[in-house]
Length: 236
Image (cartoon, rainbow, N blue to C red; front, side, top):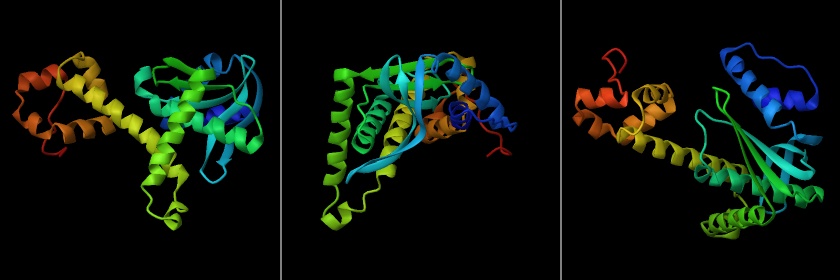
């Protein structure tokens, strides 16, 4: 999806006829149609960022969005997001804003997170002003905590900032999997929807690992209720 969006922003042709590309292209087009409509100027795509002495990374887009200098992050998701699930997205985009201001002398006023699912459900999350400042503080607090785990200055210099930013995303995804697994286990999600969730190999593995003992003790009726199908001997 990101490659389609990057090519659109740069005004160059791109296509991908693989199954992954065929799924990603409509999602990119939905973001172009819904998310990029308010963009007045593109300042940079896949912009490399560096905050001296702290961290480095790259953001998807720097632009003027509804009259504000903005950092944009594109996300694709299997399911719609709730705002309480994306704290790490906000922290990440605040870190990008700080790095861009420090390195390029800009004044980023807004962060926008554009999310699209395979069934083309588009969501947009924004932060600006005092809220953006709050997420910057949250990032610096987390960064300070990370540095406190390093015992001497030599080790401190070896901190991999890209790994730190990746940890933010992984933490958010883990929280999402955990919340979904609890709802599935409690039978709060219709069986048809649960079946769709189990098509996601990452979620299926998480669910089986977390509730392995309980699955063995569940009745076939209950497993049918939550949409879980025991693997055959051939599938194991």
